[in-house]
Image (cartoon, rainbow, N blue to C red; front, side, top):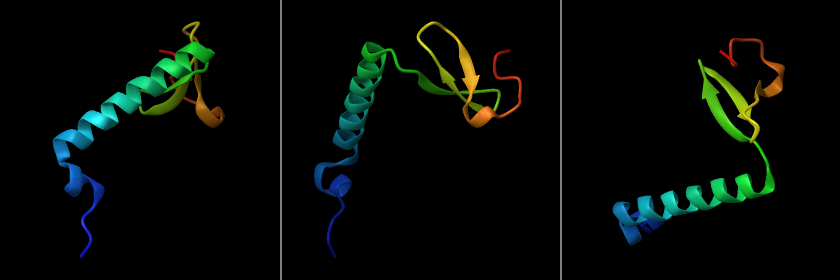
Length: 65
């Protein structure tokens, strides 16, 4: 049976690589002025660089509270 990538490089190293990739993606998002996806009170929202928060897909809810 073939080993998975995580088995090949080890779980600790895989976690390090994922954290580095997430940090790089967040920095690129910020540099481009794009929103981050965040969960607010159980509702998935876009959080824009200006602080504005909008529900994704027009979901009704209390996302901005």
